[in-house]
Length: 221
Image 1 (cartoon, rainbow, N blue to C red):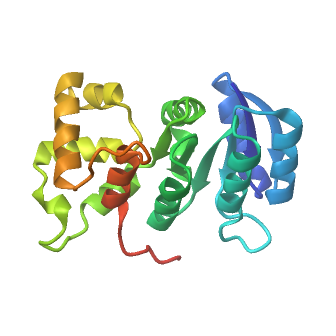
Image 2: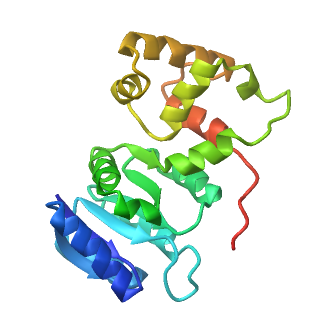
């Protein structure tokens, strides 16, 4: 797998690059800001661009903007965004704008190389990956009685949690130790309880994940 790494802090970037290389990933380019990231993607044609969300000059969402530009200009290149903070609104924006080929992990996950490699391969395969910490935080948030998610059974909520993280039916079955047929049954119930009718113009998995992720924005530190 060919990867470009974008991170403005040199030591952090070098650490990410070293971890990826030690895991057998071919790092074909490095960048310190949005323009250099876009240039690196254009010249190296990587499978995945790994980028921090916050980069110069404002250190706010330049990486997220770059992710959108990469997915539009270079659809063959997936994007894995890293963030030091739990920012649920970014996860929501990702799913709203890009139903596949993109992921969002907390930067601390870099030290768990198995998780990073799994995310890289999944986004390269066209999936959408959201950090489990964000999912767990939103899951624990109190919801009004009128919220349709309150009508889901514990197992249906567990399946929806896995869907929100971007897992396939096969991945959900493996994670929850149930059969794929059971997963399909639970997903059907989730769609029904959320009022998501079959529609060839929409992706019900993404809509279900969006319903799950809808939340008050997490304040910036």
